[in-house]
Image (cartoon, rainbow, N blue to C red; front, top):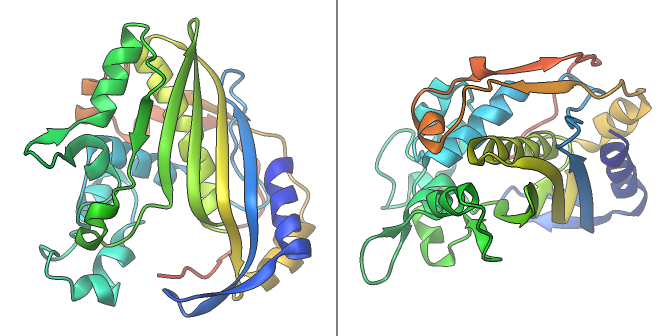
Length: 283
């Protein structure tokens, strides 16, 4: 929580106003932010200065790892986070590559599980990582990338959290995640949960110990219609102690993640929080 609140205060104190063409709104912006999460000690980075709907964040990362490209699949898992971008983004609605209602196109998990090769076929980046780590292999290229400029025109949104780089030292697994852009009041709450859970899950299904997760953000911002709530509500609240995340120990393989895992396989212990804050969301 201290890392999160320090970043929020830094944006308020040091941020520069930047016009955002996609949303038509201004953002108070800083460049370069880093947050670290001790996954090995189960220090779950769940926001306590407002209620966080953590199951939705976990459902989204599970959907990415399954390669989903349809908002309905995400809803069935337990999150509505893709409804607006799939169905309310006018540029995407007018895009000839859109296949119909709820279609997201070739974004995020599609790239992670089926990156198109120019000579035909696809590359399953995530399976390669899991296979290597399960055998104790780290070729210094255990990288899961969702950022494919050649197919931006075929999806409803460029990825914000774009690259996850796994590193193995002995039997301990580390993760470094890179994010080009972050809506701090809304998105970061999700993103830090997802970085944490990604390392915890991959360590569990590969039989490794989880170490630290390093979260690097390039452009961190607060939208102009979020600023008052951040300054006068959230930053005036005292945080509670971090809760603990419990993951079903029966999740033992990539196939498990792909087939039967639901949000019932995750629970949080000791979560104290303040009241929710309804921050505006920009499509």
